[in-house]
Amino acid sequence: MAEQEQPGLAGQLADVRRIVEVGFTETNGKLAVIALELKQGERRHEELAKTEAEHHRKVTEVLEEHDRRLQAAETSRAAEQAKAQTLVDQAKRFSAWVAIGVSTLGVVVGVVIKLLGGGS
Image 1 (cartoon, helix red, strand yellow):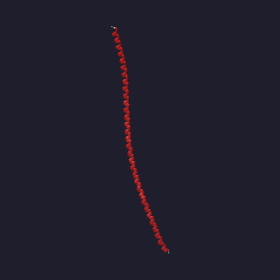
Image 2: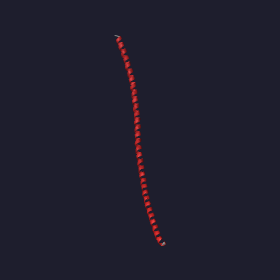
Image 3: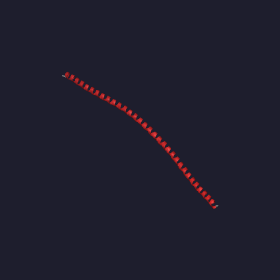
Image 4: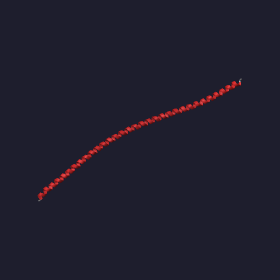
């Protein structure tokens, strides 16, 4: 009877061994799939990081160009304001001299009329 149990025990051990081997094989396969998915995830992350860096660079360039245009417009606007202020100042001086000239002319005409009218 002891001899009959041993082949049965050996058969059971062989069954357990096959079950364990199948389990390890399935586990190794699942680990291989997980490792592959992890590598694909890392590659995708690298691609997204490169894309984001490129987009950031482009947006930064656009913003810098916009800032340069704003600064140029501000400089141009300041120059136009200075030119306009110069024209206003010149117009004020011109109008003051015109008023002085008209007043002087009026005095001269008055004196001439008085001299011509008083001598008759």
